[in-house]
Amino acid sequence: MRFIARILVSGLAVLITSYLLPGVHIHDFITALLVAVVLAILNTFIKPILIILTLPITVFSLGLFLLVINAFLILLASRLVSGFQVDGFWWALLFSIILSLISSFFESQRRQAEEEA
Image (cartoon, rainbow, N blue to C red; front, side):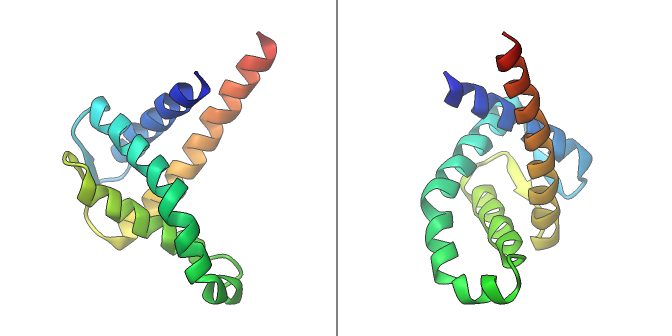
């Protein structure tokens, strides 16, 4: 049940972020949910491999290279999901930052609601 709630929250965050950024286009909420699922899968399986492969540059950049990895994963998701388009690397980078902020806000609200219930 928590996984479904997280995907719904992530889908809403993807939709809101796409409305905020003119360089990110999304067809509808179902596409946003699909993007959330694809990003969850990519973050689970591909991101750890990329982190290990780029560990020296990540350490040298004090972790800022992780933003580049996130942008790459968003560009990959835009290739995999029809109805989701990102106009370039910088839009993907900005999308990843804003998506993280919005998702964190929604997750904190969801956890707070669970604690009160």
